[in-house]
Image (cartoon, rainbow, N blue to C red; front, top):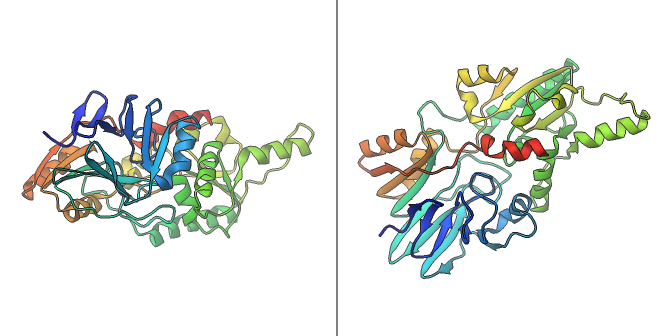
Length: 349
């Protein structure tokens, strides 16, 4: 029997009797990270990596039964040795290593190999079977270095400031937004945040991650109205950077920042058609997932002879790996794009 099988509730370990990132409520869930397509509400117990505790509390609520384990520490579940290892995706993200009767499997969740000052770097973990995400598993997806990427973001922000415009970057509230604020040159101007971004940013700071000062837009608007006795007169947005989730793009909320220039931060900006569909001024190629070279490196360094690819261009990656001589196939899961998964929660913030 395989150490991990696919049940109607998600990835299941029969020997340990627990699920990994289940998409339905189950008695015991071992979870890779706090994005809502992996961390679902309603499970009886959660086991997660310790650095992600504040994020999981933010997403699952104060009453959720959450147990944390430091990276690398082994927990025994019915004879299955379970440990978490950094995935480099977002704060607290982890690959899950399972060992039973001499067989070792690793479930990556989502991951990236690029450096990120807001979370621990990806750790290569040796295993027999490697379950890998494949969100950007096409050769066209190759990321720029951080210097090149944020040099572009800072240059765009400075130009907008010189023109008296507000700069808005749309980025996923959990992970991407914090990576943007950690990467930009905060001396250019003030940084304001959408409520959904600020909520997660507080969880990052509570976890010990250093980020530049930010001010929620709602506090500025409320203060201006009070000062103007009901009429908002102050317009502090010129020259500022506003970080908001993708769900705010095109909303009445975004219109208050005129004159403005808008940008979207996503790995999908690597493709010209995606930039056109967004109808924004700039697209910055910034992803919290591995690009094509990163995926191939992770597979190679795992030493796995069997690879199962999931969510994304899974069939492309599996076919490429078979051509390299590996036993590779697709495992069908319900994980999705972070944008889609978190849009509902962001819209409510």
